[in-house]
Image (cartoon, rainbow, N blue to C red; front, side, top):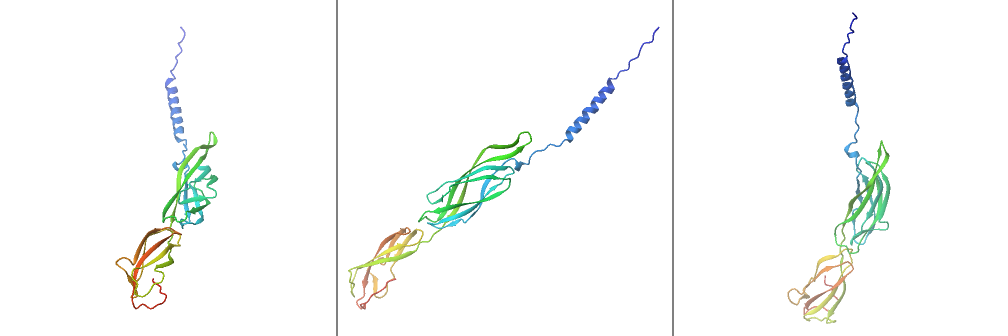
Length: 253
């Protein structure tokens, strides 16, 4: 009688081997580094900083220097700055500035000429700036990639401050020949603003003395109101001349 062959099962060893292989592969996978860009490297952000000078005067045209900065970790390409005009403050000459590129966290100085309107009222004025650019980065699977156009509305502000300068121009009297003892003598004087800014609430007061006194209450002052730069308005006063006034030319402050 022949002997029967005994076959030993091998399944446990195979299963054990498969389990070890799977666990090893899993550990290797877990140990593989995964690279993710930092949050600030995933965007580019173009801004305007350090504007000099910011103090301007009415009627002035000045060269202004500003810093254009990329505040993001991604490079910026094809940067375009379009300066919009306003009624009071505007950019003259080249109103659009192009910058080829700004690397991440880098900056560049640019210059424009800013003009302030004559007789501009004192105040703070903002010039709108439309900005556009494209982000630029390296993708391991695609190479260098440019993003879609990014747009932002920026602005630069200026403090406009001028001074009015009030002068007295031509002076006339009625009657033309003033004599001692005359009453209700009309004095008319042109009040001029030769300054660079409008003057508001202008009131002119005639300083009387013992020879010349107001004909009645309030006739020694005249309210002008607003007087723009280069303008003039007439002020009227009424005075009585003392009887003992000496005949000569007088100056009334």
